[in-house]
Amino acid sequence: MSKRVLISGASIAGPALAHCLAGYGFEVAVVERAPHLRPGGQAVDIRGVGKDVIRRIGLDAQIRAAMTDTKGMGVVDRDGIEIDRIMADEHGGDGAVAEIEILRGELAKVFYEATQDRVEYRFGDHITSLTETSAGMDVGFASGHREVFDMVIGADGLNSGVRSLAFEAPDCIRDLGLLVALATVPNKLGLDNWWLVHTDGVRTTGIRSVRGNAEAITHLGFPGDRSDFDRGDVAGQKALVRKRMGDMGWETPWLLDQLDTAKDFYFDSISQVYLPSWSTGRVALLGDAAYCPAATSGQGTNLAIIGAYVLAGELAKADGDHTIAFPAYERVLRDFVEGNQKMGADNARSFLEDSEHRMEHMDFDEMNTIMNNIDLPHYA
Image (cartoon, rainbow, N blue to C red):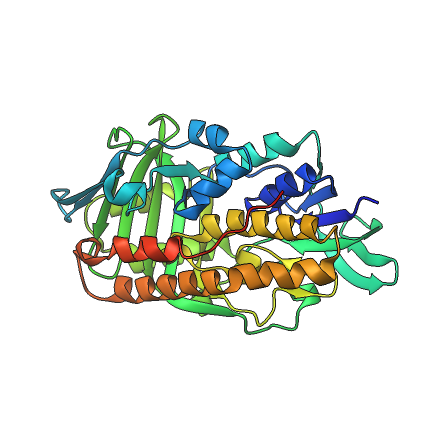
């Protein structure tokens, strides 16, 4: 009998898991609070063993076809004069600029298009209650609908709603002392598959061209934590960015002027998630919801995809028995996750040091060793 699995979240981890589970014959539904797939977003990377995983799950060609094709990155001073340059082919394609780099929205679209005929997607709704019964997980939705599933997987990010409903973990999010804002802006500088970054030591402004150089994405990073802003107050978030970044040089003033007219705006803390267990009963967490390594690790997307592959593989191996599969999923991944989280925390500390040449001192060979430090099972 096929097991029914509900996944919360249609960003990266959720559709990746849906793709893998559907391939094993599970009956899968994905619920997403947003009314549709969210386009754009920041550029994310697939590195190390993640490259092997996308080949194993049959999506290597589709993902590579949607890459940003960023050639490299220039570090500039406040007058726009280049002081350092890093190319995408350095460190085997796993350096500061990754060989496989793709906009978050484009990667979500690849997984969605690979699953839309085999998976039920429910946009504009979200889980409001979870009750385990002898029949399975009784799930209540914001729409008023109720339904029973064999398992529920929370793949709904750093601020996971499933985690808040099913886990007693009020202090699981740890701030690393950095805040970041992202927005789509015009490609004013005429960048050609290129990324420019300016830092004054602890604050960073960046611009990178995307979508065939038709547009650009800016990222603005500075010290701070979750206590500095209200997640529901977008105007307040933009005001905070302007206050903290207003005296930066280079193109920063112009970029700050673009925030109000940008078609998208993202703001959050650079944080990690630590849980003693990633599952409870018939509920498990995946990706950032379970073990966010922080953007400073460069491994968030990798861990989401690798985690989806392992969780689906262990469920298939256990014939859908979550009591066997959930602990096995954690045994395979826990040490690997912890190594990547340590790397993310160490990198955040280095970013907060007053160093305008921090990229020159980052040990990418050591980082690549961490990114590949897992004996990844092969699943039938």
